Length: 452
Image 1: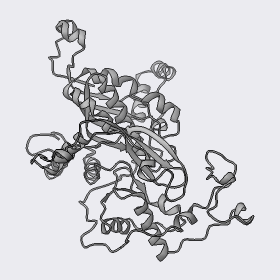
Image 2: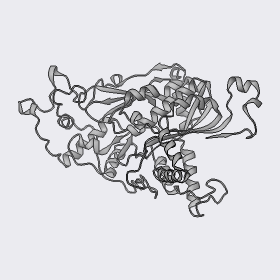
Image 3: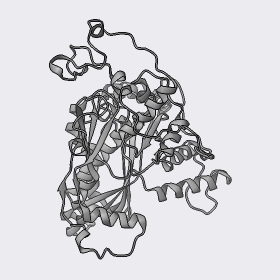
Image 4: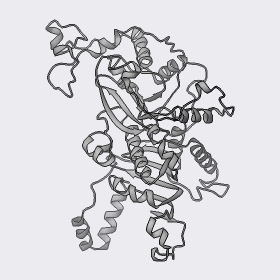
């Protein structure tokens, strides 16, 4: 769908030669919603949007973006997903934004995400596109790689590059600091440096299990949303709720929205997220790694807050925990929980019955991955994690008023059984329905519309 700033009676042959030759942007908003991937249409859409215009993109190829077909994802978006990762929903969004930013950068343009959400069986992003050649130079600061442990849920997100001057300027804007830095010795330099991996962070391998990392990305590591716009949308929906779902000020929504309640719950969930923390932990997956019961979400987040770290939920995954705490702090909380609630004993493996100690390595002293090698039994991950000393002061006390949320319908269920995308329409079916008559076509369309 195209919303043009030009009169509907103006045709391409009436545009001036400069606009036709250089393909100058003509449209305020473009919405791409194909069946499957939107990757083939992004190049032309980025060129056709005006400076500051809104570009909406929907992708339903979650089999590729979610990691089931990583080779397809790399061919379409130039990035590798992670199969069976707990945060695959958010990683799919960030891969799409990464590819979109790279496409825009070819034409000296940048993107600013307004809203990026995972809904039902697809991902959908709204971005503003700007002519900003200087911003293209900073593109590498918003791209990064994900290093995921092959044995546990620990992960690191590292940027592709760093720049002291840009980061200092952004820090001043966030903190509203206007006084200049007069110390020449500590003046940041405007030099782009290559990013660093976990090895430079002191973790050449997983700190908890000693396992190697597998790499995903590149992906977008900047903000996913514009919180000011999200809050304004929530305010309008709440104002319209008391006025027959119509904005009393005359703005949007001008007509009742059938999905107003669901949309309000989605936006409220988005507004509560940490925008500067990429990816998240799935709490049941973290606890199952050590065979313990799942820690109550409120207690887990309270322990993070008492340790001095921030945390939030994620709009798509009810059991997600986004936090700026390092991996070892997350595992320290799990270890402290296991001291109070001892985990169940796992059934002894064949290798342990042969006399090898729990937590031992495989052949040649190296950790082995069942998913990749498929031969030797994997080491006892739970024993290795729980054998480490607790370095963080863990307090599960829930502060007064902690966890209070705005009333909203979060994480809505599917409207009906077997709800989801159907098989793409084929020419054969269309011809058969057209031969049967218009009445049959209307019945078919009405039946298909129930699933979308």
